[in-house]
Image (cartoon, rainbow, N blue to C red):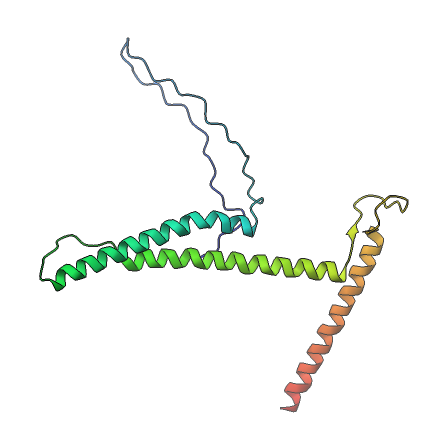
Length: 182
């Protein structure tokens, strides 16, 4: 299975004018209408994992229908062979349709796991770093109770990095002690 990257979207190619050919007089060329207006501009990074899951449900349903149709055709062919009837048509490949169905299921599973991981990271961030960080100059008289100044945010991040480094060093020394005792 190949995960679909966030930036991989179909791009509309610009319409190129048709080259003028020798057209006999009196023959009218069809006039091309204006290209259809897009209702929503597509941004490659706007689709989140839940949006990708919702977009995959249509192809999943279609793939399941194709799988059932292929299975029915294979069963019908096997039934006709069992009844000693000859059927010259080959049924569609059931394995191919089943593989397509499982591929879409795997993509949906990947997006669900990624979405759950994002939610877990967000919950951890809210737990260990409550509040928002002010993007501009922090003014404590504003009505922003949960806003942290950028300098406080930097100090918090530095302490988190120092703690993570201490944990890393502790794990390294513990693993070296374990490997040296064996």
